[in-house]
Length: 474
Image 1 (spheres, helix red, strand yellow):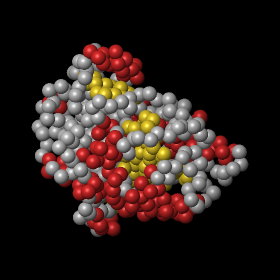
Image 2: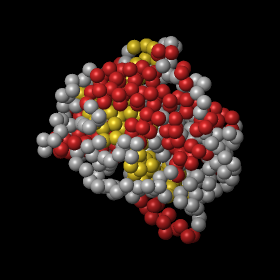
Image 3: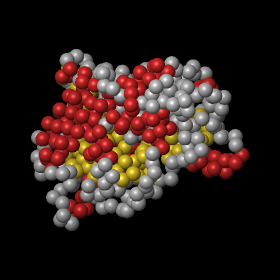
Image 4: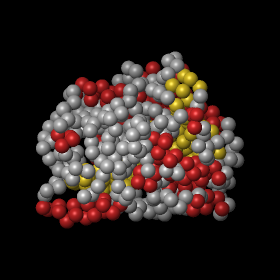
């Protein structure tokens, strides 16, 4: 083996933690007469990105990490694309949106995708609707919700509507009715970058802009841009003999669905790690180009919020998995950076729990529309930290997914230092990350931890409501 542990080693780098003073929204500052209008807000979401991939993203490091805030405990409650994106759009957990899955089948066992989003009444509850009503020019470019078809028309709230339809989404795809083929110029991350820059340049400077930019990289099939196909990324991949939970050599204390998995070929894991590194490099170019356009629009981003994050993490052989959609750390932990010069500091490492739905609440506060979204379950990151933990929740894994693993539904509770999860089979897991950062030792039967386990089980049972389809505490 020649390359994986450094990526996971990045998971342990949260050393300095800044204090968290309360912040006023930019809209409030504007009312005091020191800012011309609410801030421009650009929210960039990558797909299936582990945190360590930031190593090959110098623009994210330079413009967002070094000049903004890095949230080293950023996570998602449901670690699969569509439920996570539904939470971003609405600021609600999956039990609030009713979106539990990517919706790759008509079966009601897997309520998800755009169909579930619409059927559960979410269309009028999005951050786009709230911002559009407040006078923003709103736009989405890239991935929307799984199983969206352009024949459904643009959802309410979006002034610029350029979503993917059909796929795969690197080449040979449709973007809002225009087909792109196999020419290098058609590489989708670059197309999205060019279109995003065009929207920024062509938005009236007196009109606040909200732009939701959602490239496909580094999602399967992990396709780099032509310029990065042979990029040397070996120095960013550092597996060592003690690499975490690689292939879970001793899985007797794991649930049956993990125990029955075969170890994965290390060469396959390395190929995915290499290709995801190369694929995300074009996403970094997108970030660089978008920030350059924002700087040309408004000076040095003095009234601009820029967010970068992923919709979920991804397993690279952890627990014999090459996928996401589990409660384990490498699937639920994500990279997250926010640069907001009026309300956040520069070069700060922040250790608070920061969820995808918290970003929605943060955007709402910065734009002054928080009061128009009473359903929000997220906590604004512009306010002091109050979240001590959060619910983990997931329905059946879907056999129509390309990386399907037969996992039962679950509910759980996650804190910065612990994970509790209960499956519909009744099997439970409990981990302490300060003692066991790679979830190798299930401590659910250790008497020492029984009081804590009872506490987090109670919290999970209270907050996992309604329960995911197929799950029952009894």
